[in-house]
Image (cartoon, rainbow, N blue to C red; front, top):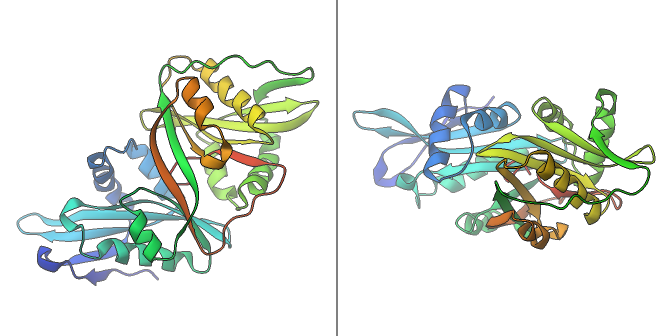
Length: 296
C-alpha cells in the first residue's frame, strides 16, 4: 500500500509526498502552466489514468496544503517504464524534494528499466540517480507546415485502421519500441485517428493523430524506413491544413532537418535518458515519433 511520507523542506515548513489523486490534477496542471508547458487539463487526466503519480504538498500559513510538485510513472509491462511530468515548484527548489520524488517513482518502477526525457535543468539530478543519455529528442510544432504530397508506389495507399487490426498495431509497437505498451496504446486509440500505410495488402507503417496541448500531436509514427515515416507525417499535414501540429522525434530518427524544411520548427531539444535495462526494438520496425515527451 502506498502511504504519505513527511519530508523536510528547510525553512519552508513541512512537506508531504503522497500518491496523486484525481482531485490533484487541476493543481498539477497549474504547475505545468507556470512552466509554460502546453498540456491541457484533459492531457493530465489521460496521463493520470494510465500512470502512477505522486505529489508534493507544502503547508502554507493561512492557506493550508498547496500542491508544489508532481511526477508520474507509466509501467510498460514487467520490464520497462517511462517517467514524466516531474515538477518541483520554484519555492521548493534546491531542498532535495526532487530527489525524494524521483526515488519514490523509481521505487514504483522496481526492477524495470526506466526511460525519461530530460531538460537541461533536470539532467544533473537524473545523472546522479544513475540515468545515462541514450539519444536526443527534438520537439517540433507549427500551424503553417506545408509538406509535399509524396507519391505512393503502385499497390500502396493510406487508409484508416480497421478495428480488427488493433492487435497487429500493438504488436508493431512492441517490436518498434521494445516495450509492452499495449495498455497505453489501447487507451490512446480511444482518442486518436490512425493512418495506415498499406502496401500490397500489408501494413507498412502507422501514424496516430490526437488532440493535445495547443492543437494536435502526431505520434507515435511507426515505419520500416524514414521515407515511409515522412509519407505518413505528410499525410496528416495535408489532411489537416492550418492545424497547429506538434511532433516529438528521436535524434536517431534522422527526421529533424526535414521537419524544419517543411515548416515544423524545432522549439526544444532535450536528451533521452535510461536507468537500467534499455528497451531494444527489433531490426525491421522503428519508432519515428513519440506519443509525447512525457510518455515516450
